Every structure is written in structure tokens, then in C-alpha cells.
Amino acid sequence: MKSSGTTELNTFYPIKPECQADVPATRFKPRAGKTLSQRRWQASFSQDGHLDIAKVLRRIQRGGVHPSIKGEVWEFLLGCYDPNSTLEERNELKQRRRGQYDMWKAECQKMVPVIGSGKFITTPLIDDEGQPIDPSLVGVQTSDKKVVQWMQLLHQIGLDVHRTDRALDFYETEANQAKLFHVLAVYAWLDNDIGYVQGMNDICSPLIILVENEADCYWCFDRAMRRMRENFRSSASSMGVQSQLATLSQIMKTVDPKLHHHLEDLDGGEYLFAFRMLMVLFRREFSFADTLYLWELMWAMEYNPYIFTKYEDPDRAKTKGPSPATNNKHLKQYGKFERKNVKTGHTEENSALSVFLVASVLEIKNRRILNEAKGVDDVVKILGDITSNLDAKKALNEALKIQKKYLSKAKKA
Amino acid sequence: MGAYRADEDYDYLFKVVLIGDSGVGKSNLLSRFTKNEFSLESKSTIGVEFATRSIRVDDKVLKAQIWDTAGQERYRAITSAYYRGAVGALLVYDVTRHVTFENVERWLKELRDHTDANIVVMLVGNKADLRHLRAVSTEETTNFAEREKTFFMETSALESLNVESAFTEVLTQIYHVVSKKALEIGDDPAALPKGQTINVGSRDDASAVKKDGCCSA
Image (cartoon, rainbow over the protein chains, first blue to last red):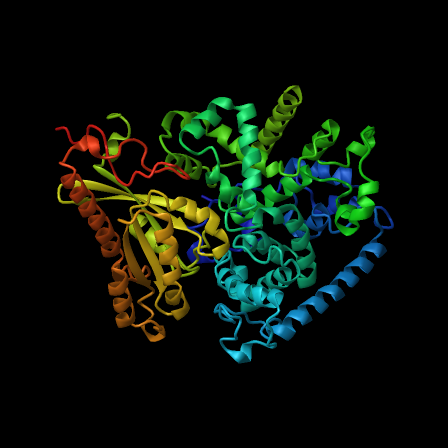
């Protein structure tokens, strides 16, 4: 049985008929009076384009964003634009960024001509020694380590693009798949520290669908990665996300020592079973439409009015950081989660809202884990049951409660 | 202990890992074996996922706990943590992409660096249904498997070809290794490692565990 909400969402993010049965059910429904609507969004801008971000955040945290405007709203939530700017300033910035992206893409295309052709590759371009496997596919002969490393990643991006959200109609066209490929390839070229790691495709895909212009997608993805890129850092002995897992362990030890010790007894004290949730921000636990809802709630709750400056002009952001004596009106420009951090002076980088969200999921399953889990495999199984059974907003509100508890206990300790 | 999970009683619990290059079909082999499902829209594996299934060999119930791993090199720090305690491995390559076969050697080394010498390894050439695209011949792998003393089978998760046999063969071989071991140590059940078998990142290298109490009757 499908509710009308699901039917409406299906027109925004159509699922291939043969895949209907395989994807998790969607719970999100745009609700009048709660969800940020197109009309209300437009009414939140002043004459010259300044955005009343406090008003918008309040709405989003109550009921998400209507599918018709998600892309443009997300650009603000992710920090691509300053709400305290004019429409003209933003248009100017947008044009500049598009030009910049085109230049980077041309740079990539010079090395690998398939980029920009509307097609993409799934087989390796060069061998272990950096020699081209098919010389017609490689535009430059080089031993430059940066170039070689990047080229070695491209077929992995292609392999993953080929199987990203394939239940959605959107990716039936090669042009849309290529759009995802381009953004990931250009990103990997510029952020060669991280390059490309599986899972980044899952983060990028919704942006490709919601934001029409490819260059604009790139900038959204770049901003999203600013929050998450450390998770994707990998070495021979560890992965970056393990810092977040360590924070999770710390949080659980503080707010629910009994459960934490039980998990430790099962040799699950490293919380590796939460690995995927943090890496791809719960994409596998929610349907596509519900992920969008979850993410916009999270990003609204994590919103910091200095986010744009922090990314655009890091030096200036340091001098202009939030003062402790922030007044009430100013505090309303923060999301619920970030506001609490600012108030308590808590600035731990690894304690993102997503980490508290995992904690809230563990709390939901607290009893079953304590009673039934005799090994880490059981924990994985019990957590697997949350797929499409989780209410994004409820779970996030629980996460906020855990944050409150954690901050007050951590303060006392 | 007897009351716990009475509905899925088993005599042996074996930890098996699925490894190999990205996109060779590891996850679909697993879902074919454990759920008889195959999906053309399946997503890449992030980190490690797992599923279980029990089979009967002789008069014993063997429960396989199969850990499916991400293929990308970057994930190796996480995935190799799951090798510990594995008694079997299916090392998968794609018969239509020769490079995935070339990498088998690297995978094998990696596996042998992290696991017990007695581990049962099966090379699995998947996507055998794509006959017109074949790039790795059966002889090539047969020679390699003989040299490396591994088992070998070609499968198609899509057509459900040999998937059952590949897993069953691995589990049966593990069972033989374990029962031989039991025989060598005088069939003294107390000599078999006991307790928690499968631990993520555990120091415990228990290879196979006979569940307490189940064989006393």
C-alpha cells in the first residue's frame, strides 16, 4: 500500500518499475505547515536577496525541504553561499565557480580525453608502472606521481558510477552517469590527498540528481566533502572514519556504560559495525528520498552561520569566529545541534551529529543488543533491522538528547 | 546455552571471507548463496558486510558465517581485520576482466599473511555466463590453482551456476580439515578451541568451534 506522499515523491525521484520491490520504503512526506515550501522559501529573501536563515532553519528542522527546491536550499545548508549576501553577489560567485570548474575539467580532459565526452571508463587506464594500457585513452605520457595516482583511480570511479543508485530512473542515461563520473574525477584530481574512495559516490549521487548544473554539483560536493573528507582518508593501517568511531565509543561509554561494556565484551568496542553508517551517512539504512530528508535535517541542525566564510576564506574565519557572548538573535542563525556546541564551547571536530545519530540508533536497539547479542555478528544483524524502520526526525531528536547528556556529563567529568 | 538460538542449532560454525577485486560479483555470490537472490542494481560494499547460511554435511550441520568485503585497496586496513579467524576464503575474480585474475596473486599473499596456514582457499571465476566476453581461460586458472594448491571453480551468480557447489565445497573441505584435526588430537573435544569463535579484531585465533553440548546425545 502506498501513501500519497510516496506517490508524489516517486514523480521527483522515479524508481525503475522492476526495482520497486527491492528498495526500502519511504516514510518522508512533505507536510503543509512543517516542510519548507517553495512559497515560503521565496518569501524568506529580502528585496536584494539576503536570506533569513534563522527562519528557514526553523522550518527545515521541523519538516525538511520540499522536493521542488531541495537543490537550491542545500547549496545554502552546505555553505556554498552566504545567506548574508545579495542575489547579485551570489550570481557573480556562481559564474566564477563555473568558469573555474570548466578549467579544471579541461585540465583533466587533456590527460584523459574520455572525460567530458559523455562516456566513462571502467577498466584501468595504466598499469602498476604507470604505462598506458590503451595509449589512445591517455593524453599524456608522464611519470608524475600525482597524475599516475589519479589515473589509477579513474576506473574504480567508473566501476562504482556504473552501480550507483541504479534502482533510480535517473541513472538510466549515460549522460547522467557521466555527470557523476566527471564530478568525482575532477574532485579526485584536486583533492589528491583523498582522491577517490568507494562511498564517495554514494555521497555525491543525490547532489547530481538535485542540482542541475554540473559545475554547481561539483561545488556542493566539495562543500559536503569538507565535512566528511577525513573519514575517507586511508593508510595501510587505518581509515579516517575510525576517529569518529573512537568518538562514538567515548560517547557510548559516557551515556550508556552498560551497553558499551557489553559491546566491549563482544569485542565490538571499536564500533566497526557502525562503519558504513558514518561513511555514507546512513544511505543504506534509508530509502533514497528518506536519505535526502535525513541529510537536510542534519545539515540544518549542524548549520553554522560562519560556514561560508570558513570554507571560502579560512583565514578571515579565524579572526571572525563566534564570540562566546553571542546574543539570542544571533544564536537563532545556528542549527539546534551547533547552537549547543557553541553555547558550551564544545568544538570537537570528530563529534558530528552523525556520530550521535549512531548512538541514538544503538539506544533504540539497546535492549535487544543486551539480551540477544552473543557476538558482533548478532549486533550487525540487529542493527540491520533498522533499514526503512527508522524515522529520521525522531532518531535525530534522540541524537540531540544524547548530545545534551554527553555534553553535561563530559563537563562534570 | 542450549536454549539460545534453538531454532538454528549447528554443530560447527565456520568463518569464511569473500575477497577479490572491486566489481567481480562478491556480494551477488553471497546473496545468491544465502538468499537465492541476484540483483543487477547491487551497490558497492562499504567496508564489510556479512550473511550466514547452514548446510548439512554427513550428519553434521555446518553454519557458515560469510564476511563480504570491499574490493578497493583503500579499504584494506579495515577488511584485513576481518580475515582473522577465517577458516575459508573464496577469492573471486571476473572471467571477463583479465586484470582481476592478475590480481589474484596479490590477494592470495594478503590472505596468507593474515590467516592460518590451514585455511581452505577456493578461486572463483565469476560471471561465467558472459561467454562471449571471456578473457580468462579455464586452463589458465587451473594451472594457477594447481601451483598454489587452491581449489577452483567457475560460477555465475546471475545464472546460479556452481554457486552452491563452490560454497559447499569450501565448507566441506573445512569440515574435513577440522575433523582430521580432531582425530589427530585424540578426538578429545576438550582439545578443540572453545568459546567465542568470530571476533572482529579479536586476538583469539580460534579456527573452528564445536558448540558446547550439542553432540553429547
